[in-house]
Length: 268
Image (cartoon, rainbow, N blue to C red):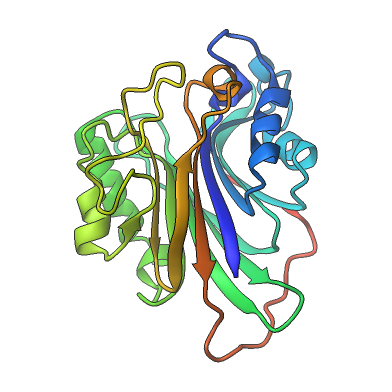
């Protein structure tokens, strides 16, 4: 079954023109028709974004019935963090604290998503949506916190798994941890390996490949690209990246997991 994944640092829907325009972000998301969208820098209840719940706004405007939100940073008014939108039921979600010492709060939103096509296809996909810090040593420690977390460490190596988001990794130092040690492959580069990443920041003239998608398990990469709509150069300071995979069904179908009745999960 084909599934399309997007990772996008939406910069609180404040564009490089310093205007708050959530409709531009929603337009980019809707245009690319991804099945799962990993968003970073998502405001909830913050005055600079009209106190809106931007996860809910993006889900409604871009037609995603399910979403989860992991709020990491507490402001004087409101919070912000990561959000994952999905066309398929999110049956579990939890926010993993990646904050190092007294540095800015960071986190990774882990969502388990039930992929079904209404027929005989069924598979659970583990999605880790993260936003790492600005210091290289901080980022290495944050990756260590992630891979030693119960959520990540308990996953069988054969489970379909995605790790994506804004890694802030200017020199591509973190990619070998995922590819050479954890047996992931990178889907956000121009070719196989990780040495030639898509440049995504700043959006109007990109020089850094900060936004990544790694994958592992029964996922075959079919196509990948950096989004280059005219509006993406303005809507955020990052460009989105997209990857399309062929996802294999479970070999032995297990009883259906009970999807949560509520479509929203707030994790702090």
